[in-house]
Length: 326
Image 1: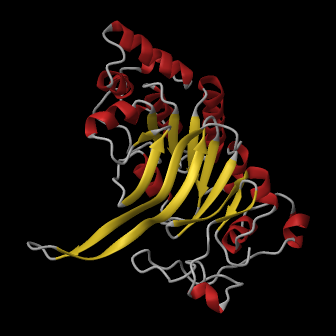
Image 2 (image 1 turned 180 degrees about the horizontal axis):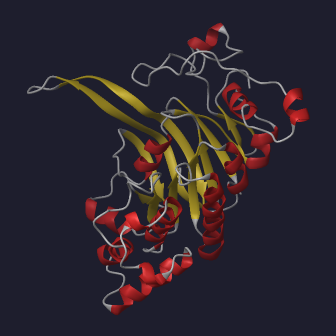
Image 3 (image 1 turned 120 degrees about the vertical axis):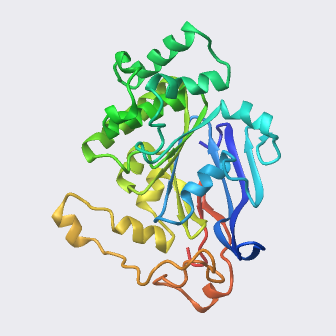
């Protein structure tokens, strides 16, 4: 995979949300460090999984890559194009090649628009088709996601959650993108529908050569769809590895704790394996711990873990970790 072309390059990315005080004369009294010094690459044609508990910064990374949130500092490159310094006009051109599938299919579709208008909006914004061609393209996109083309004049409330997410996928595909950020696209769906949506994403990736950043909680689903997996904790990435290496040889204590919590449909194996139970709650991103951010909950923490920030290093080809003792 390392010989493949890098499509997205992220370097030392930070996104801080200011905390202000006062009604008329507001002043900044602190910051929520949602993403704090993150670096990684996404290769063309792969699916990179991004996992971690709620509030760790996964969605913020996705939105900051697309410049829906402007970063506090750092670099984001799409191929050789600098997204951070790009103007509004340039970003609009680039967003034709980068799209997002949102988590909540009930909130991400405009309830006052028909399905035809929702899916056709990217076509109008980017001036890709006109007149009857737009109608034909919308019907073609609906067919791709297995929605009857006769439904184009219906409204979102007339569809189920799974159908709405398929409509969201069709909208993301409308501008013929190369890179799609999937922000927990199955977490709001029934289990029986989740597999259908994931299989659809895989089929579309194979058909159109798409590249995904797949944000999720479900480690079993991530194992099914992703080529590499990155783990986030409190605004930083603590481990990144190829899928098989990640699941068979996790090095970071937080990764080990996550994997030990994944259900296994075999009672013999479940009884034999050792659970890693984390104590306490995650610290606040407003005031993160010094040194290693995980040291307050880490079962193997040493004195130096609270003082020294662990180096982000490659311990094996393609396997990166930020831990003093890994």
